[in-house]
Length: 207
Image 1: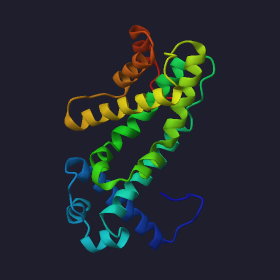
Image 2: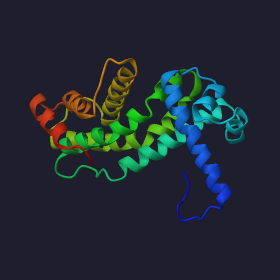
Image 3: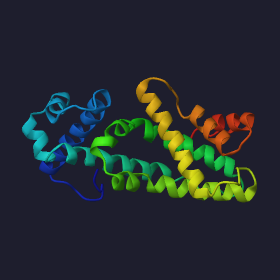
Image 4: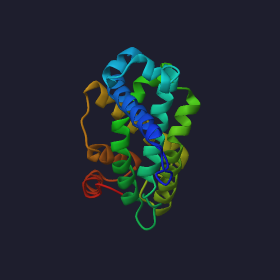
């Protein structure tokens, strides 16, 4: 990714294209086999190992590149999601439906987290979503539409854990979704009636 307002030289443009090609190949290859080597990723990207090392000093640098891409995608996806005004249920449905495609694209990071990601990297990646979901829950509790017995930040972490668990179930083949079922499950978990939750989840395909 780069600032489109900055004109790149042909050499810089080729380098950026190659870097993005390697990252996309890595995303797919590591999704299939989390223990893939940089050599495996070079084959998947149809470039030499030397080319991969020219962009990434090692596996940790490559994973960091994927995390940076995921963080940018998450921030961009959540930017249009308005904080709750009159209907926190709507805001939560939009939040989950907007979050899901990004999570689905980068869910391979869940398989890498134990060995390749530091807790600080995960916290930085998820910070925008954590802040927004806490704000939505705070408003939902004020409106009386979400459970009020759990502090908003704690409930937000529970929502996060639920969504991440379902993404991991996609990795294992135990769950398939476009975000609708997950949004329904989250709404029910925070205290919304099941029928109303399903209605909102189906209605709000995007923020």
